[in-house]
Length: 235
Image 1 (cartoon, rainbow, N blue to C red):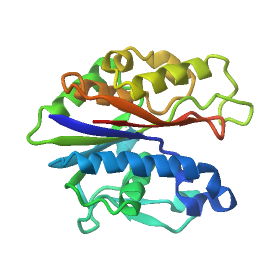
Image 2: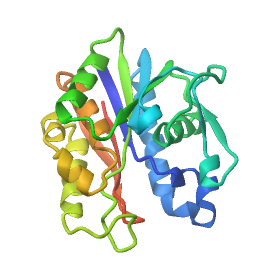
Image 3: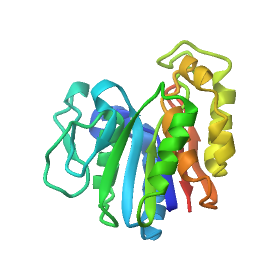
C-alpha cells in the first residue's frame, strides 16, 4: 500500500559540487526536496522505492548498496543507495541524484531499493509497474525522480517549443493534486518531443497511487535553466 510519495527533479546540478559557482540557483529546489523527504519519513513506511528514468543498463531493479558516480560530470564524487555496503550495479544518473538526496537528508526511516524506468515505456505498462509496487507487502513510500520539458526557453538543452510550458503546467498540476488520472493521461509522444525525462516515472507513481486516497502538495515549480523542475509531496 502506498502511504506517501515525494516527487523531485533529477538534474545532476542539484549536487552543489557539480554546480560550482551557480550552486545557489537551485537552493530552492534542494530545500523543497528536503521538505518532501520529510513527508516520506513522517509516514513511517516499511520500505522506500526510488523510481527514476534510465536508459539501457540502468533500467530495472537496484538493491540497497548500488553505487552511483558523478565522475562523468567532472566531479570525483560517489554515492550509495541506502545504508548497505557498496555493491552491485551502477546507478543511472537520476537514481544517483536520488541517492545523494537521501544521504544528504540522513535517510534512515526505512530500507531503500530502486527501479530504473525506460522513458519510452508506454503509459499502461508504467501504471502496471506502479500497481505492482503498491501491491507488495507493508507500507510503501516512493521517491519519484524526473524532469519536465527541456524546451522551455532559448537557453534550454532542447530547442524552444511553445508547447512546453503548457505541458509542464499540466504535469505540475497533476503532481501537486495527486491526480492519478491526469498523470495517466500525459501524452507520451508529446513528452518525448519536449524532452520531458519524467513522464514514465510519474506514470509509475500514478499507477501506485490509484487506490491510495492520498492528497498532494506542489512545493516547487520553476524552470531555471529552461527545464521544468517540480517538487511535490503526497501523503
